[in-house]
Length: 122
Image 1 (cartoon, one colour):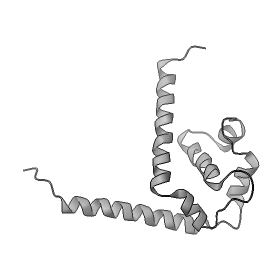
Image 2 (image 1 turned 180 degrees about the vertical axis):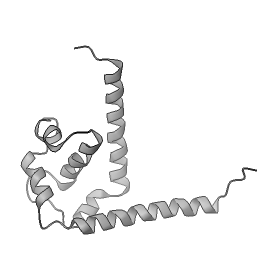
Image 3 (image 1 turned 90 degrees about the horizontal axis):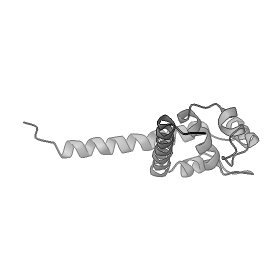
Image 4 (image 1 turned 180 degrees about the horizontal axis):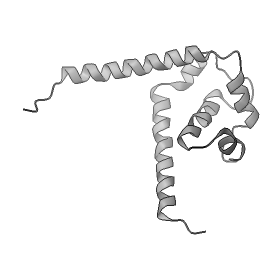
């Protein structure tokens, strides 16, 4: 099977997306936020691995079946993903609140830095 230029561009774009998402997860400490929200490992894959796999589905334009069940490269089991999404003990509201709070402070810091260093365009 011959790879076309479009296929190569798609692969490069996907790897760039994974790198950007990895940077986002590191900067905002998603693993720590998951732990603080009571989203902890009960068995199988870590919550961060499951969350990352599910989060990446939206950026690869795939549904749960295509991205988790049929994709053998991902080390997350279908049952683990469904249990992760349907667990009643996980506090998703707290996770969302903490994530929004961290994003707010990053944006606020960026805005404060830009106000301290005005540029002379004139």
